[in-house]
Amino acid sequence: MKIYLATNNKHKYEEFVEILNHSSLLLPAQEGIAFNPEETGNTFFENAMIKARSLYELVKTPVLADDSGLCVKALGGAPGIFSARYSTPPNSTENRADYGINKLLKEMEEKTERSAYFACCIVLYISESRFFVFQETCKGEIAKEKSGNKGFGYDPIFFIKELGKTMAELTAEEKNQISHRGKALQKCSLILNNLANEL
Ligand code: IMP
Image (tube, rainbow, N blue to C red; front, side):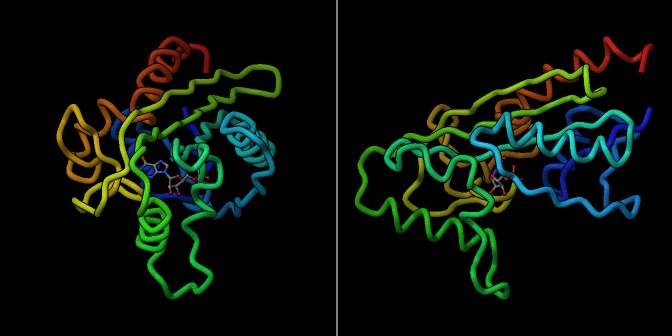
């Protein structure tokens, strides 16, 4: 069974493939489908539904969508649903990952309250009338400087106290065990297995 993943983010795709171990997970771009819906929702859930619905309208076959981001307590939950936009440099020649990280480190310079969490909402969209939602979080702190070169996005400054490492210092397997996306996908995988005979 083909399942489309409603994203253009190759890092997310890799994590989905590793965790779901699903052989027919497809990116729209791999099939020449242009996909770039406007994320007009106010929550991770609303944006995940927007992505899922708009890709489903194009492919009419089951779709998985992910909307995720980093919520920082000292910044009132920002960048939150704007995490991707927050890390988009005005000048396209700048490195996107570094831009968001440096901007956040600067905003956090004077802050002693450094707790944060990643959130990930995954929608498994079977049809207009049938879908499943999984939302999970991963708690951590905003480090004072970058460390590690694995993962993507804000991983180098997301410090996990219990492990004494940033997310970017974890192997893919370690990250997938504890991450927001890993935990949501572990639950999603149970439902997918349950639906295997009917999809
Ligand atoms: P989305 O594609 O609109 O869901 O944007 C999610 C953004 O949140 C990404 O571009 C990253 O900046 C950030 N993000 C989400 N998940 C992770 C993660 O696992 N590690 C680091 N950054 C993440």
